[in-house]
Length: 462
Image (cartoon, rainbow, N blue to C red; front, top):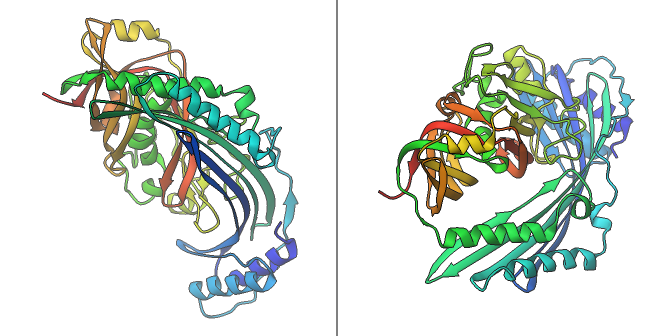
């Protein structure tokens, strides 16, 4: 834990050359990764990250420095480096009084993952690989992994903040590779949460995710190639929300908005989506993968309505960009670890449930594509233009699911796509991912109910 008197002295020195705000972020993190391929455990890694980051503001200037040396001399050297980058003339700074605060913890942890015996952890991933292989002789490879970490942070700043938080994350993955006649197809499932090892005993059935991964790979192995064209597209819930996350969510972060690098700049209060669309970024959901008690600037996390019935209501705003935008922070300041300065990031971001029946969404679409599972893709956050692979897709003919197809991609522009959503299902669920941006890679949830887009460009084969 960061010594309060050390923090006070470092902060005071950091602003001694003209800075008007300084913040310390102390971190001590233990992590573990265990993985198996087929019948052999091939990775067993534990690591520890320990260090402190210090940033100083002077108006709209920001300096960030970090070090793994957290004793008094290390903090003073760090403060001198930051102060020197801000100015050269030392001033008499006013005294800083740090007031400790206790953060209410809404994320109950029953079993710290790293306290669980290795034999028990290994048995879990072995069971997943066995279950994948048991689905079919066409399963060529089975992979599984456990990944968890326990992060202790202390945040202090010149406004008097001195607060601590503990974050515990657990995640499991199952990956299957199906093969026939030189063709390989992959299926996967990777649930996780801000929760302990009890995740695998209360919320996630390891055999069920093994079967899910295997069945996806097998289905796509025997699928026809997807035809290309412009057509209605139904995108299922869970990881289907990755399109909103990438093509729209990033464009609502102050990281881009504050600098004019977003298609949604200056559009607060305007309609930017179909009236069917309400989108939320919520960091308060107990034990959810993208949640926190406080963000990485010490601000209590929030439930933030981004879009309400098509109207843009809020941006996600961190402390520094709140200065540029002259708008309040939203508890969205996040970072991978102490080596990164924080910036605005998504947490658990989803399109809220609607009132359309899922069966009607497909039965009334005529001919089109049903994207049951999304894969990876690319997006230009400034323009919102995206290109995403469909991990598991089906052609729909006359309102009925006809046959599986592979090789489909969805191509479009975020702002245009969300205006074309004409039906939103009643059941919403989320899926887990790691989101990369200026402040590194952080856990984020994406989600939505089943949605329908009246038309999209589908890449495939003519």
